[in-house]
Amino acid sequence: MKSKNTALRWLYEYGIITLGCALYALCFNWFFQPNNISMGGFTGVGQIINHLVPAVPIGIMSIVLNVPLFYIGVRKQGVKLLISSLYAMTIGSLMLDGLAAVYTFQPMEPLLACVYGGVLLGISMGLMLMMGATTGGTELAARLLKYRFRNLSIGRLCLIIDVTVISCYALTFRSVNNALYGIIAMYISSLAMDAVIYGSVNAKIAYIISNSSDEVAQKLLKMDLGITLLDGKGGFSGDRKQVVLCAFKRSQITAIKAAVTAIDPSAFIIVCEAHEVLGEGFSEYTPDSL
Figure 1 (cartoon, rainbow, N blue to C red):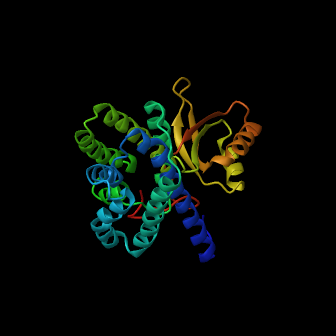
Figure 2 (figure 1 turned 135 degrees about the vertical axis):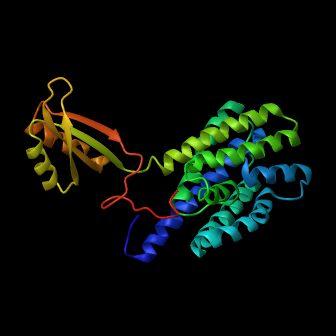
């Protein structure tokens, strides 16, 4: 949400972070804890410590373990990360322990727990990361490692860290099956997280091949769309043609197809998903980009 009103922007961002925290606490208490499925990360480390020392709450231990990472994170990304992530970590931990205190979920089929828990976990983490916040642990570590490993997605980095923690979890609880379920849950979580973060880019690309490319180009320009003309050559006919390349918002696809076919019903239109579009009218690159 881009708004000139700072108060509204902050209200929106922290509302999304709070929703992410609520989903995080719900998926942990509903799907992971009752079935002894590790979530990985510092929450997974907290589960291990809680098993060894039951008097230590999982949420509080998660806060303690995050202090060194937050110190490094502030040096890398500034105070904004500290404020938003401290909020997310505190609210998430309180919701986690609070929900566990008022209601106890019953165990369920482990496969259902790891599938639905993984999806809900990935959505919650993705929402918080999009707002520049994390609950610490895996997500914060992955965000910092992203500076070093730019070619890996944030979900893939989280998966690597989580699998390491889950392996330790398996040794502690002496349950290979639950650890394997945990790996499945974390894999699904990484896919859901990447879908929320990268799949949220609301853009497509169209390649338009037409005998009336000049007219098509002028029509798209009147629709306030940016275009690029590419030189092309028909593979069968050998005729020279201009290919109209256009990046646009997902909601504009119907209007574009209608406009092009109205000019040239036989136009060849190839519409592709755009993983990311940088530039005027779309997002901008920053060193902190996920």
